[in-house]
Length: 453
Image (tube, rainbow, N blue to C red; front, side):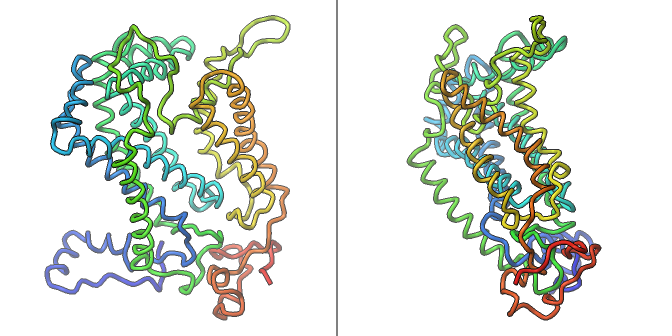
Protein backbone atom coordinates (compact mmCIF):
# COMPACT_ATOMS: atom_id res chain seq x y z
CA UNK A 1 0.00 0.00 0.00
CA UNK A 2 1.45 3.36 -0.99
CA UNK A 3 0.16 6.75 0.17
CA UNK A 4 1.52 10.18 -0.69
CA UNK A 5 1.47 11.09 3.00
CA UNK A 6 3.47 8.02 4.11
CA UNK A 7 6.76 9.01 5.73
CA UNK A 8 9.76 8.11 3.58
CA UNK A 9 12.87 6.39 4.88
CA UNK A 10 15.92 8.67 5.05
CA UNK A 11 19.21 7.13 6.20
CA UNK A 12 21.05 9.42 8.60
CA UNK A 13 24.62 8.08 8.72
CA UNK A 14 27.09 7.29 5.92
CA UNK A 15 26.99 3.59 6.88
CA UNK A 16 23.20 3.43 6.65
CA UNK A 17 23.27 5.35 3.34
CA UNK A 18 25.76 2.84 1.93
CA UNK A 19 23.70 -0.09 3.21
CA UNK A 20 20.51 1.42 1.78
CA UNK A 21 22.15 1.58 -1.64
CA UNK A 22 23.63 -1.93 -1.56
CA UNK A 23 21.03 -3.88 0.45
CA UNK A 24 17.98 -1.79 1.41
CA UNK A 25 16.98 -4.02 4.33
CA UNK A 26 16.45 -1.11 6.81
CA UNK A 27 14.17 0.56 4.22
CA UNK A 28 12.23 -2.70 3.86
CA UNK A 29 11.71 -3.00 7.62
CA UNK A 30 10.84 0.70 7.92
CA UNK A 31 8.19 0.42 5.20
CA UNK A 32 6.83 -2.88 6.54
CA UNK A 33 6.52 -2.30 10.29
CA UNK A 34 7.78 1.24 10.87
CA UNK A 35 6.62 4.80 10.50
CA UNK A 36 6.62 4.35 6.73
CA UNK A 37 3.63 2.00 6.90
CA UNK A 38 0.33 3.88 7.51
CA UNK A 39 -2.35 1.76 9.20
CA UNK A 40 -6.06 2.46 9.78
CA UNK A 41 -6.41 4.36 13.05
CA UNK A 42 -9.35 2.30 14.36
CA UNK A 43 -7.81 -1.19 14.65
CA UNK A 44 -8.91 -2.94 17.85
CA UNK A 45 -7.20 -5.72 19.78
CA UNK A 46 -8.59 -8.36 17.40
CA UNK A 47 -5.86 -7.17 15.03
CA UNK A 48 -3.17 -8.25 17.53
CA UNK A 49 -3.48 -11.92 16.72
CA UNK A 50 -1.50 -11.75 13.47
CA UNK A 51 1.58 -10.52 15.34
CA UNK A 52 1.00 -13.08 18.10
CA UNK A 53 0.80 -15.86 15.51
CA UNK A 54 4.13 -14.72 14.07
CA UNK A 55 5.67 -14.79 17.55
CA UNK A 56 4.31 -18.31 18.13
CA UNK A 57 5.85 -19.49 14.86
CA UNK A 58 9.22 -18.04 15.86
CA UNK A 59 8.93 -19.67 19.30
CA UNK A 60 8.13 -23.05 17.74
CA UNK A 61 11.06 -22.88 15.32
CA UNK A 62 13.60 -21.88 17.97
CA UNK A 63 12.51 -24.45 20.58
CA UNK A 64 12.02 -27.12 17.91
CA UNK A 65 15.53 -26.74 16.51
CA UNK A 66 17.06 -27.15 19.98
CA UNK A 67 14.85 -30.13 20.80
CA UNK A 68 15.83 -31.79 17.51
CA UNK A 69 19.46 -31.78 18.66
CA UNK A 70 18.56 -34.23 21.44
CA UNK A 71 15.80 -36.29 19.79
CA UNK A 72 16.28 -39.62 18.02
CA UNK A 73 13.66 -40.59 15.41
CA UNK A 74 13.84 -44.31 16.16
CA UNK A 75 10.87 -46.31 17.43
CA UNK A 76 13.09 -48.15 19.92
CA UNK A 77 14.44 -45.05 21.65
CA UNK A 78 12.16 -42.11 20.70
CA UNK A 79 10.12 -42.29 23.90
CA UNK A 80 13.32 -42.56 25.94
CA UNK A 81 14.92 -39.55 24.26
CA UNK A 82 11.91 -37.41 25.16
CA UNK A 83 12.34 -38.48 28.79
CA UNK A 84 16.07 -37.78 28.46
CA UNK A 85 15.28 -34.24 27.28
CA UNK A 86 12.91 -33.75 30.21
CA UNK A 87 15.29 -35.07 32.90
CA UNK A 88 18.90 -34.69 31.74
CA UNK A 89 19.18 -31.83 29.22
CA UNK A 90 19.73 -28.42 30.80
CA UNK A 91 16.33 -26.70 30.81
CA UNK A 92 15.07 -29.48 28.55
CA UNK A 93 11.81 -29.60 30.48
CA UNK A 94 11.30 -25.89 29.77
CA UNK A 95 12.03 -26.29 26.07
CA UNK A 96 9.74 -29.28 25.74
CA UNK A 97 6.85 -27.71 27.66
CA UNK A 98 7.28 -24.41 25.79
CA UNK A 99 7.22 -26.27 22.46
CA UNK A 100 4.22 -28.45 23.32
CA UNK A 101 2.15 -25.63 24.82
CA UNK A 102 3.41 -23.24 22.14
CA UNK A 103 1.61 -25.38 19.55
CA UNK A 104 -1.66 -25.05 21.49
CA UNK A 105 -1.24 -21.29 21.90
CA UNK A 106 -0.35 -21.01 18.22
CA UNK A 107 -3.68 -22.60 17.31
CA UNK A 108 -5.57 -20.46 19.84
CA UNK A 109 -4.36 -17.19 18.31
CA UNK A 110 -4.81 -18.51 14.75
CA UNK A 111 -8.39 -19.62 15.47
CA UNK A 112 -9.13 -16.16 16.90
CA UNK A 113 -7.42 -14.60 13.86
CA UNK A 114 -9.62 -16.69 11.54
CA UNK A 115 -12.86 -15.90 13.37
CA UNK A 116 -11.99 -12.21 13.27
CA UNK A 117 -11.66 -12.67 9.50
CA UNK A 118 -15.09 -14.33 9.39
CA UNK A 119 -16.80 -11.53 11.32
CA UNK A 120 -15.12 -8.59 9.60
CA UNK A 121 -15.13 -10.31 6.16
CA UNK A 122 -11.38 -9.88 5.78
CA UNK A 123 -11.57 -12.24 2.79
CA UNK A 124 -13.39 -9.71 0.59
CA UNK A 125 -11.80 -7.89 -2.34
CA UNK A 126 -9.17 -6.55 -2.59
CA UNK A 127 -7.78 -8.90 0.09
CA UNK A 128 -8.66 -12.30 -1.38
CA UNK A 129 -5.03 -13.37 -1.77
CA UNK A 130 -4.25 -12.53 1.86
CA UNK A 131 -7.10 -14.81 2.94
CA UNK A 132 -6.17 -17.65 0.56
CA UNK A 133 -2.57 -17.64 1.77
CA UNK A 134 -3.85 -17.63 5.35
CA UNK A 135 -5.86 -20.81 4.68
CA UNK A 136 -2.75 -22.42 3.16
CA UNK A 137 -0.84 -21.52 6.35
CA UNK A 138 -3.57 -23.14 8.46
CA UNK A 139 -3.43 -26.37 6.43
CA UNK A 140 0.37 -26.47 6.77
CA UNK A 141 0.01 -25.88 10.52
CA UNK A 142 -2.35 -28.83 10.84
CA UNK A 143 0.03 -31.13 8.95
CA UNK A 144 2.98 -29.96 11.04
CA UNK A 145 1.09 -30.35 14.32
CA UNK A 146 -0.09 -33.87 13.46
CA UNK A 147 3.44 -35.00 12.65
CA UNK A 148 4.77 -33.39 15.81
CA UNK A 149 2.17 -35.21 17.91
CA UNK A 150 3.58 -38.53 16.66
CA UNK A 151 7.18 -37.82 17.71
CA UNK A 152 6.94 -38.48 21.51
CA UNK A 153 5.94 -42.05 20.54
CA UNK A 154 3.47 -42.48 23.36
CA UNK A 155 0.21 -44.38 23.10
CA UNK A 156 -1.74 -41.47 21.64
CA UNK A 157 1.12 -40.71 19.25
CA UNK A 158 1.15 -44.26 17.84
CA UNK A 159 -2.59 -44.77 17.63
CA UNK A 160 -3.21 -41.23 16.39
CA UNK A 161 -0.84 -41.92 13.50
CA UNK A 162 -2.61 -45.23 12.85
CA UNK A 163 -6.07 -43.63 12.79
CA UNK A 164 -5.24 -40.46 10.85
CA UNK A 165 -3.19 -42.18 8.14
CA UNK A 166 -5.92 -44.82 8.03
CA UNK A 167 -8.29 -42.15 6.74
CA UNK A 168 -6.45 -42.22 3.42
CA UNK A 169 -7.37 -45.89 3.02
CA UNK A 170 -10.98 -44.74 2.48
CA UNK A 171 -10.02 -43.27 -0.91
CA UNK A 172 -11.16 -45.72 -3.62
CA UNK A 173 -8.51 -47.69 -5.53
CA UNK A 174 -5.43 -45.77 -4.34
CA UNK A 175 -6.28 -45.42 -0.65
CA UNK A 176 -4.47 -48.41 0.84
CA UNK A 177 -1.29 -48.03 -1.30
CA UNK A 178 -1.28 -44.33 -0.32
CA UNK A 179 -1.46 -45.20 3.37
CA UNK A 180 1.42 -47.67 3.01
CA UNK A 181 3.43 -45.04 1.13
CA UNK A 182 2.81 -42.45 3.86
CA UNK A 183 3.84 -44.81 6.65
CA UNK A 184 6.63 -46.57 4.78
CA UNK A 185 5.03 -49.84 5.89
CA UNK A 186 1.79 -51.39 7.06
CA UNK A 187 1.85 -49.80 10.53
CA UNK A 188 3.57 -46.85 12.21
CA UNK A 189 7.20 -47.77 12.88
CA UNK A 190 10.74 -46.51 12.22
CA UNK A 191 10.01 -45.49 8.62
CA UNK A 192 6.94 -43.47 9.61
CA UNK A 193 8.73 -41.88 12.56
CA UNK A 194 11.66 -40.79 10.38
CA UNK A 195 9.37 -39.35 7.70
CA UNK A 196 7.23 -37.47 10.18
CA UNK A 197 10.26 -36.10 12.01
CA UNK A 198 11.84 -34.86 8.77
CA UNK A 199 8.63 -33.19 7.61
CA UNK A 200 7.87 -31.79 11.07
CA UNK A 201 11.29 -30.13 11.04
CA UNK A 202 10.93 -28.84 7.47
CA UNK A 203 7.34 -27.58 7.33
CA UNK A 204 7.73 -24.70 9.85
CA UNK A 205 10.23 -23.11 7.48
CA UNK A 206 7.74 -23.59 4.62
CA UNK A 207 5.12 -21.91 6.83
CA UNK A 208 7.55 -19.04 7.45
CA UNK A 209 7.93 -18.61 3.67
CA UNK A 210 4.15 -18.51 3.16
CA UNK A 211 3.87 -16.04 6.07
CA UNK A 212 6.25 -13.72 4.20
CA UNK A 213 3.98 -13.96 1.15
CA UNK A 214 0.97 -13.38 3.42
CA UNK A 215 2.51 -10.17 4.81
CA UNK A 216 3.60 -9.07 1.34
CA UNK A 217 0.04 -9.54 0.06
CA UNK A 218 -1.24 -7.58 3.08
CA UNK A 219 0.94 -4.57 2.28
CA UNK A 220 -0.49 -4.20 -1.22
CA UNK A 221 -4.09 -3.21 -0.27
CA UNK A 222 -3.22 -2.45 3.37
CA UNK A 223 -4.87 -3.66 6.56
CA UNK A 224 -8.61 -4.01 6.85
CA UNK A 225 -10.37 -2.39 9.81
CA UNK A 226 -13.46 -2.88 12.03
CA UNK A 227 -15.50 -0.38 10.04
CA UNK A 228 -14.80 -2.02 6.70
CA UNK A 229 -14.41 1.38 5.01
CA UNK A 230 -11.25 1.82 2.98
CA UNK A 231 -8.64 4.48 3.74
CA UNK A 232 -9.35 7.74 1.92
CA UNK A 233 -7.15 10.39 3.48
CA UNK A 234 -4.21 10.96 5.78
CA UNK A 235 -6.40 11.45 8.85
CA UNK A 236 -7.70 7.88 8.45
CA UNK A 237 -4.28 6.42 9.27
CA UNK A 238 -1.50 6.51 11.83
CA UNK A 239 2.06 5.17 11.40
CA UNK A 240 2.47 1.55 12.42
CA UNK A 241 5.33 2.62 14.67
CA UNK A 242 4.99 3.73 17.42
CA UNK A 243 1.21 3.36 17.67
CA UNK A 244 0.70 -0.28 16.78
CA UNK A 245 4.10 -1.53 17.88
CA UNK A 246 3.09 -0.30 21.36
CA UNK A 247 -0.35 -1.86 21.08
CA UNK A 248 1.08 -5.15 19.81
CA UNK A 249 3.69 -5.01 22.56
CA UNK A 250 0.96 -4.79 25.19
CA UNK A 251 -0.87 -7.71 23.61
CA UNK A 252 2.35 -9.72 23.51
CA UNK A 253 2.91 -8.99 27.21
CA UNK A 254 -0.54 -10.35 28.12
CA UNK A 255 0.08 -13.37 25.89
CA UNK A 256 3.42 -14.12 27.58
CA UNK A 257 1.86 -13.91 31.04
CA UNK A 258 -0.81 -16.46 30.09
CA UNK A 259 1.73 -18.63 28.28
CA UNK A 260 4.09 -18.59 31.27
CA UNK A 261 1.26 -19.60 33.62
CA UNK A 262 0.53 -22.57 31.37
CA UNK A 263 4.17 -23.65 30.95
CA UNK A 264 5.16 -23.35 34.62
CA UNK A 265 1.94 -24.32 36.43
CA UNK A 266 -0.23 -26.32 33.97
CA UNK A 267 2.21 -27.82 31.46
CA UNK A 268 0.21 -30.99 30.81
CA UNK A 269 -3.31 -29.57 31.01
CA UNK A 270 -3.76 -29.52 27.22
CA UNK A 271 -2.14 -32.91 26.59
CA UNK A 272 -3.37 -36.49 27.01
CA UNK A 273 -2.09 -38.57 29.93
CA UNK A 274 -1.89 -41.72 27.76
CA UNK A 275 0.96 -40.13 25.82
CA UNK A 276 3.17 -40.65 28.88
CA UNK A 277 2.80 -44.39 28.24
CA UNK A 278 5.25 -45.77 25.67
CA UNK A 279 3.66 -46.81 22.36
CA UNK A 280 2.37 -50.37 22.36
CA UNK A 281 0.91 -51.76 19.09
CA UNK A 282 -0.76 -54.59 21.06
CA UNK A 283 -2.67 -52.32 23.48
CA UNK A 284 -5.35 -50.06 22.01
CA UNK A 285 -6.39 -47.09 24.21
CA UNK A 286 -10.02 -47.04 25.25
CA UNK A 287 -10.57 -43.62 23.69
CA UNK A 288 -8.33 -42.43 20.86
CA UNK A 289 -8.40 -38.66 20.41
CA UNK A 290 -6.16 -36.18 18.59
CA UNK A 291 -4.88 -32.96 20.14
CA UNK A 292 -7.62 -30.52 21.16
CA UNK A 293 -7.12 -28.21 18.18
CA UNK A 294 -8.20 -31.02 15.81
CA UNK A 295 -11.38 -31.80 17.74
CA UNK A 296 -13.94 -29.90 15.58
CA UNK A 297 -12.72 -31.60 12.41
CA UNK A 298 -12.51 -34.96 14.18
CA UNK A 299 -16.14 -34.47 15.25
CA UNK A 300 -17.10 -33.79 11.62
CA UNK A 301 -15.28 -36.98 10.59
CA UNK A 302 -17.18 -39.07 13.14
CA UNK A 303 -20.54 -37.41 12.40
CA UNK A 304 -21.04 -39.67 9.36
CA UNK A 305 -22.19 -43.02 10.69
CA UNK A 306 -24.08 -44.39 7.68
CA UNK A 307 -23.26 -45.12 4.05
CA UNK A 308 -24.76 -43.10 1.22
CA UNK A 309 -26.87 -45.65 -0.65
CA UNK A 310 -29.34 -45.78 -3.52
CA UNK A 311 -32.81 -45.92 -1.92
CA UNK A 312 -34.57 -49.29 -1.93
CA UNK A 313 -31.60 -51.04 -3.56
CA UNK A 314 -29.01 -51.24 -0.79
CA UNK A 315 -26.28 -50.29 -3.28
CA UNK A 316 -23.60 -48.20 -1.55
CA UNK A 317 -22.51 -45.10 -3.43
CA UNK A 318 -20.14 -43.64 -0.83
CA UNK A 319 -19.11 -45.47 2.37
CA UNK A 320 -19.54 -43.61 5.67
CA UNK A 321 -15.77 -43.49 6.23
CA UNK A 322 -15.17 -41.78 2.89
CA UNK A 323 -18.06 -39.36 3.53
CA UNK A 324 -16.45 -38.39 6.82
CA UNK A 325 -13.05 -37.86 5.21
CA UNK A 326 -14.55 -35.71 2.43
CA UNK A 327 -16.49 -33.62 4.96
CA UNK A 328 -13.48 -33.21 7.28
CA UNK A 329 -11.24 -31.85 4.52
CA UNK A 330 -14.13 -30.00 2.88
CA UNK A 331 -14.80 -28.12 6.14
CA UNK A 332 -11.50 -26.29 5.63
CA UNK A 333 -11.30 -26.27 1.84
CA UNK A 334 -14.60 -24.37 1.55
CA UNK A 335 -12.86 -21.41 3.24
CA UNK A 336 -11.01 -20.91 -0.07
CA UNK A 337 -14.34 -19.95 -1.66
CA UNK A 338 -15.56 -17.48 0.98
CA UNK A 339 -14.56 -14.38 -1.06
CA UNK A 340 -17.07 -15.48 -3.71
CA UNK A 341 -19.75 -17.02 -1.48
CA UNK A 342 -20.27 -13.81 0.50
CA UNK A 343 -21.55 -11.22 -1.99
CA UNK A 344 -22.47 -8.47 0.47
CA UNK A 345 -21.07 -5.03 -0.46
CA UNK A 346 -20.45 -4.39 3.27
CA UNK A 347 -17.51 -5.98 5.05
CA UNK A 348 -17.87 -5.39 8.77
CA UNK A 349 -20.30 -7.54 10.74
CA UNK A 350 -21.08 -4.47 12.86
CA UNK A 351 -23.13 -3.09 9.96
CA UNK A 352 -24.76 -6.40 8.96
CA UNK A 353 -27.51 -7.16 11.54
CA UNK A 354 -28.82 -10.38 9.97
CA UNK A 355 -25.34 -11.76 9.31
CA UNK A 356 -24.37 -10.94 12.90
CA UNK A 357 -27.27 -12.99 14.31
CA UNK A 358 -26.36 -16.07 12.27
CA UNK A 359 -22.70 -15.64 13.21
CA UNK A 360 -23.10 -15.33 16.99
CA UNK A 361 -26.12 -17.59 17.45
CA UNK A 362 -25.43 -20.11 14.70
CA UNK A 363 -21.82 -20.54 13.63
CA UNK A 364 -20.16 -19.93 17.02
CA UNK A 365 -22.40 -22.37 18.96
CA UNK A 366 -21.93 -24.95 16.19
CA UNK A 367 -18.14 -24.65 16.42
CA UNK A 368 -18.23 -24.88 20.24
CA UNK A 369 -20.37 -28.02 19.97
CA UNK A 370 -17.89 -29.55 17.48
CA UNK A 371 -14.99 -28.78 19.82
CA UNK A 372 -16.77 -30.51 22.70
CA UNK A 373 -17.94 -33.52 20.67
CA UNK A 374 -14.54 -34.03 19.06
CA UNK A 375 -12.94 -34.67 22.43
CA UNK A 376 -15.82 -36.77 23.76
CA UNK A 377 -16.37 -40.53 23.26
CA UNK A 378 -18.13 -41.63 20.05
CA UNK A 379 -21.44 -42.26 21.79
CA UNK A 380 -24.76 -40.54 22.34
CA UNK A 381 -25.59 -37.74 22.79
CA UNK A 382 -22.29 -36.55 21.30
CA UNK A 383 -22.83 -38.24 17.94
CA UNK A 384 -26.21 -36.63 17.26
CA UNK A 385 -24.95 -33.24 18.49
CA UNK A 386 -21.93 -33.44 16.17
CA UNK A 387 -24.24 -34.37 13.27
CA UNK A 388 -26.49 -31.37 13.87
CA UNK A 389 -23.50 -29.04 14.33
CA UNK A 390 -21.83 -30.39 11.17
CA UNK A 391 -25.03 -29.88 9.16
CA UNK A 392 -25.31 -26.29 10.37
CA UNK A 393 -21.60 -25.60 9.72
CA UNK A 394 -21.93 -26.47 6.03
CA UNK A 395 -25.34 -24.81 5.73
CA UNK A 396 -23.92 -21.59 7.18
CA UNK A 397 -21.17 -21.23 4.59
CA UNK A 398 -22.83 -22.80 1.55
CA UNK A 399 -26.46 -21.67 1.94
CA UNK A 400 -27.09 -19.15 4.72
CA UNK A 401 -24.12 -16.83 4.04
CA UNK A 402 -24.80 -16.42 0.27
CA UNK A 403 -28.54 -15.85 0.84
CA UNK A 404 -28.07 -13.42 3.74
CA UNK A 405 -25.49 -11.43 1.76
CA UNK A 406 -28.12 -10.93 -0.96
CA UNK A 407 -31.24 -10.13 1.09
CA UNK A 408 -30.10 -8.29 4.22
CA UNK A 409 -30.29 -4.50 4.53
CA UNK A 410 -27.04 -3.30 6.13
CA UNK A 411 -26.85 -0.37 8.52
CA UNK A 412 -25.61 2.99 7.15
CA UNK A 413 -21.84 3.19 6.79
CA UNK A 414 -19.72 6.20 7.79
CA UNK A 415 -18.04 8.05 4.95
CA UNK A 416 -14.58 7.46 6.35
CA UNK A 417 -12.58 5.84 9.13
CA UNK A 418 -12.02 9.25 10.70
CA UNK A 419 -15.75 9.90 10.88
CA UNK A 420 -16.30 6.46 12.42
CA UNK A 421 -13.70 7.20 15.12
CA UNK A 422 -14.27 10.88 15.89
CA UNK A 423 -17.88 11.29 14.87
CA UNK A 424 -19.34 13.34 12.04
CA UNK A 425 -19.14 16.71 13.82
CA UNK A 426 -15.42 16.38 14.59
CA UNK A 427 -14.35 14.76 11.31
CA UNK A 428 -12.29 16.84 8.87
CA UNK A 429 -14.22 18.62 6.13
CA UNK A 430 -12.82 16.38 3.40
CA UNK A 431 -14.15 13.35 5.30
CA UNK A 432 -17.65 14.81 5.67
CA UNK A 433 -17.78 15.64 2.00
CA UNK A 434 -17.64 11.94 1.11
CA UNK A 435 -17.63 10.51 -2.35
CA UNK A 436 -20.08 8.59 -4.47
CA UNK A 437 -17.50 7.51 -7.03
CA UNK A 438 -17.50 3.70 -6.93
CA UNK A 439 -13.95 3.66 -8.26
CA UNK A 440 -12.57 5.61 -5.28
CA UNK A 441 -11.09 3.35 -2.57
CA UNK A 442 -13.47 3.24 0.38
CA UNK A 443 -16.24 5.11 -1.44
CA UNK A 444 -19.80 3.79 -1.39
CA UNK A 445 -21.31 2.47 -4.61
CA UNK A 446 -23.74 4.85 -6.23
CA UNK A 447 -27.26 4.42 -4.92
CA UNK A 448 -26.18 2.33 -1.96
CA UNK A 449 -25.92 3.10 1.75
CA UNK A 450 -26.22 6.59 3.16
CA UNK A 451 -23.97 8.03 5.85
CA UNK A 452 -24.87 7.68 9.49
CA UNK A 453 -26.54 10.68 11.09
